Amino acid sequence: MSGGTPPVVRSHDREGFEHFVAERAQPLRQFLLRMKVPEHDVQDVVQESLARLLRYRDSEPATAWQALLYRIAINVVRDRARHARVERSVAQESASSAIVDEAASHEPSPEQHASDRQQLALMQAAVMRLPPRCREVYLLHRIEGMTYPEIARHGGVSLKAVEKNIARALRLLREQLKAASTRNHEDVV
Amino acid sequence: MSSERIDEAAAGWLARLMAPDCSERDREAFEAWCAADAAHADAFAATAQVHADARALGGDGWVRAATRSAWRASAARGRSRIGAWPARFAAAAALLLVVGGTAWFARTERPQQARYATAVGEQRHLELADGTQLQLDTDTDVIVRYDASSREVILDHGRIQVGVAADARRPFSVRSGRGIVRDTGTEFQVARYRGDVRIMLLSGAVNVALAGREGNDASRDLAPGEELRVGDTGELGWPTRVDVDAASSWTHGMLTFKDRPLGDLLEEMNRYSGTKVRVADPALSTLAVSGVFRTGDQASLLQALKTGWSIRAKRVSDHEIALSSAR
Image (cartoon, rainbow over all chains, first blue to last red; front, side):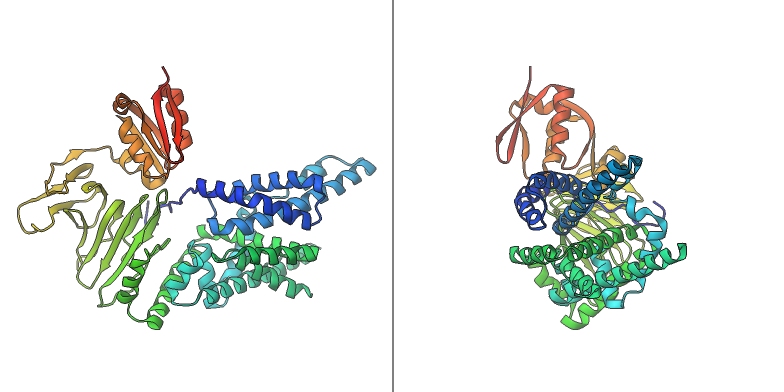
């Protein structure tokens, strides 16, 4: 390899993942019921959510799985609702089934969504605009793959400070990307 | 709640859910918040999507450089706040410090020491302050000791591959068991299981000596593609040729075997798993096998043995699988 670093070797925590899935399936059912998912749909949503989560098993650390699972489950619920709406409107207006397909495949693959170059450039700019400490902690967590305790030990700061900086980074990134997409939308209009 | 407040809460929840001390009660509170308003769940999903997308930045040179500088800046503040590193690392060593990714040591006159370890099934890649690349295989424990005049890595057990960055002022060496490997800017592997040490040279040149007998003529030079064993009781072997590609495939998460005894293959694969595969029939362990296996992927190994060699696997306990001939 010329000058660069060798590929980072990631551990493939299969047993840990299976354990996580076994442990979280029941709580996920409870969560979906709370989210007013009809009881006869809950099992399907659980199945689909866990199947989608599987794609991230090797690429995301175990500490990220819980949050990922929530995000995926919320997306699955939204997709199904949208799908149902489109199907109804398709039945009414006999529109093309392409709309249905498009609406059904909302969950992006791990790489797909962000491989969009423009999205990546926006993201890069947003990260670079974060306040220094906040950016440091976020990069060590997201890019370097360090856990909160590792970052805390490394920088000699408290765990709470690490978490606060992560939260702040997430809020600022979302804010900036939201503003950017609104701008883009206005450009088009 | 205004949309800004909702976004702020969503970010806070995401950060909490990724914390190692996130409790059942935290999750409960998060779920209640999420269920309270569709806008809450949507804000959370959108924030989590941004976080997921940020991962793709790992391939961006600019962001990687910023991450390295974050490492240094954070470590520098950590030092000034808590005091000298050696003391911190002495304490950390007792806790089995595990650091992921790129490790940087600032260049100071004080000796600096860090301990790195991997769990069974885990592999890690580290970049040290001088640019030296250190890859740790499963179940490995090393101490890295750098000072103004020397760079030393001590391998207690496991396997490492080292790509040494040239530094004429500070010689680089690896100590393991009774073996000392001295290096002059090259790439090599050191493995230690049950006392014996194996040194394999990929490129450049190294000299292997016996610990406690430095300066003596008890040392050997290795050429690229050669391997040498140092026994736990101090026997220094002679270099033998090895297949370098096969021997370094573990650094890419693979194990490559070409006509090697099944017993060796199982020993290697077992290092990556809490569940051990053993032969019920001793004659099987000398069977010659070939193949490329993903480290830790026991299921594929068992499938390959079944289809290729008619070997049957049976789970005999929670942590043991026994192999026997199907015929």
